[in-house]
Image (cartoon, rainbow, N blue to C red):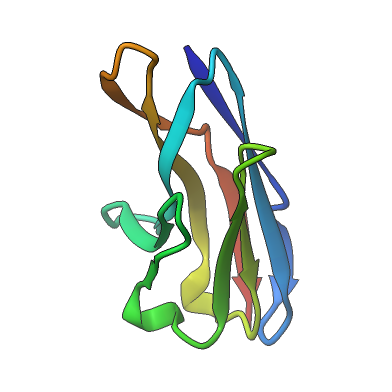
Length: 120
């Protein structure tokens, strides 16, 4: 079993910054892709950014140029630096990770989510 715990959410004003962190722990063999998703009130959960183990990154169009995803493979941690925050960035941010066990079977895990609220 792998657990994902997010840190760093909060309430900020538009234009400010936040940094989210997600730490994976437990019986870890190899974590491949890691990602951040968000779910705004009344909307579906959507991808914000994804990073492969090798560092290949994709961003949602709405956050390009404002958000930066990064990771530490040694520390099984993924980060999301969020700058120039907008009210529409408000939502619950979830960490997601693809774990490959020693037997090779992949399992996808989710964190419990952290609330980000951006006031105008």
